[in-house]
Image 1 (cartoon, one colour):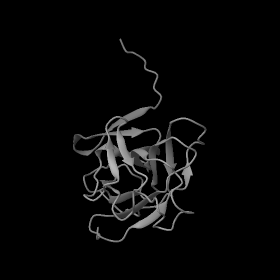
Image 2 (image 1 turned 90 degrees about the horizontal axis):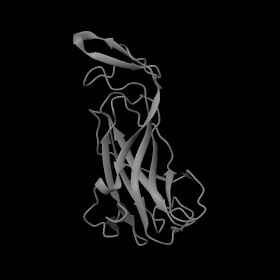
Image 3 (image 1 turned 120 degrees about the vertical axis):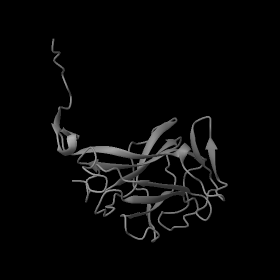
Image 4 (image 1 turned 180 degrees about the vertical axis):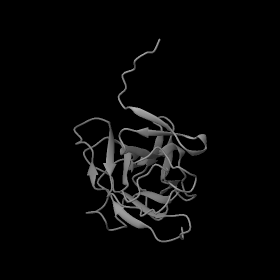
Length: 206
């Protein structure tokens, strides 16, 4: 007996060369996250003002964190499903306890295979909070300007540094950090567009 299934997203299976199975979504463009959980990321040796919070699970950026020594290091390869030419939307998930937003700042650089991966970083300050703070302790999402990494092939990589620029060393903020206490970072992510579930071959998307 055949069971009829009600599916939210219909998937069509098609057999392609060499007996591979390609799953083609009815919806050709969708969004996903490239995630960097705070508790799993790397701190430089001198980052004395960022500490691991094992109780609330994350990294605590203290009020005396400074750009010279305190930052979080991350890097990752973009998934093969990423849509070339589309922007990445960087943001942080953090714990908000007052009606201010810390001086969150990121530096990023991206490169294709075959390019020089040691170039300079671009620095950007946060722009918008996802929701308006009212009271209590909340999970907040704060965004940075989106950008095109200009990848031309699969397996491009991005390097990211995340700071709490308490003294406005970067001069990208209106002034010193207005947040009055230590702040807990939960995760850094990129929202990105995908137009496939992967690539047809290891080094070529189509």
